[in-house]
Amino acid sequence: MRKYFKWVLAAAVMFGAAAGLFSSQLMAQDAEPQAFTVMAGGHGPGNVEVLAFAPQSLQVHRGDSITWVVTGFHNIHFENEPQPLVVMSEVNGQMMPLLNSAIAFPTIETNAAYQGGDANSGLPVEGAPPFSLVIDLEPGTYSYLCDIHPGMAGTVTVVADDVTIPSPSQTTLQGAGELGATIGAASVTLLELENQAIAQADPHQVQLGSGGTGRATINELFPFTTVIKAGESVTWTNPADSVEPHLVGWPPVRGQDVAPIEVEGQPPILAMGPTLLPLTPSESAIALGEAFASGIIEPGQSYTLTFTEPGVYSYTCNIHPAMNGTVVVQPAA
Image 1 (tube, rainbow, N blue to C red):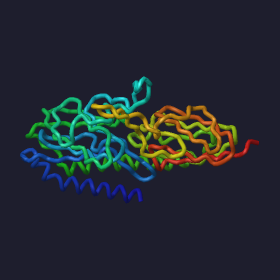
Image 2: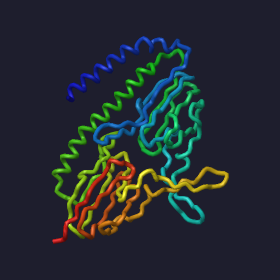
Image 3: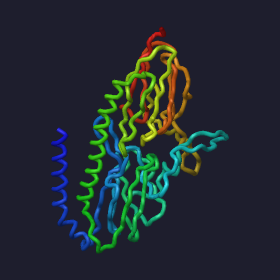
Image 4: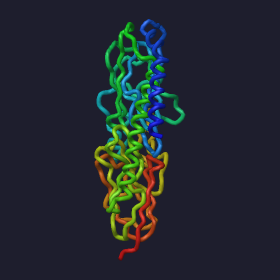
């Protein structure tokens, strides 16, 4: 099956290159603006998610447009350094974690002309159209990124009108190839991680997602079921070379990432909602039936709970709905 996939991908690349050759040769003389598409993220089997722009690098002429199709929790921000997702700020005399408004809210409208400087799409809103910009820039290379996922970055290179560039169909095929290669490599790693989890000797350690998979993340738990005795602890660790944060909690809390606080005459303050709040400190002890919530566990961080009573404790990552696990607690000897 893997050889067959490689042959199909190779054939698609050859066909796309041949089909787009004629159109790309004419683009330098074509006065009509071109419309390009960039994928912001992608998904594959086994809860594999790609945190990358595809194609990562794009050439355009001045006047061309770019549409970013957002497939996850991403923003498009023309800036050199990412902004922090969560900031501490005083609200009604109390310090509290807030979603950074510099990330959450757009600074430019979709379909507007981008003429340089800081420009942010804002975080995706359900039902909103894809984010598009008309590139009105002098020749040069311009960088953009996703603030939520460090390392998720892309470039737009504006070239002179008489320079031939790949056609929109060619760049779309290039982006699909980049996503496919990343998903394929991560799928191989998924099998390796599952086999390692089966053979794992220490039931007190659970790996959150994957590390060492480049711009892909495998949103699973390794192992997803662990067996301990009452009074023992489990530690969840997000690998240092991961590219995605995770959570550990129960019961599931979906779609409540933020809790807006209205401010007269201003955009609302976006306080962190129940999905993301760290309600249960690490090293806490919990009994059967008690709710718990770790808050965001960043790459390189760990979170530990002690289970005091026998029973079955289900848990989930609230930002990755299919990322679920179970701790089975047996009576102490």
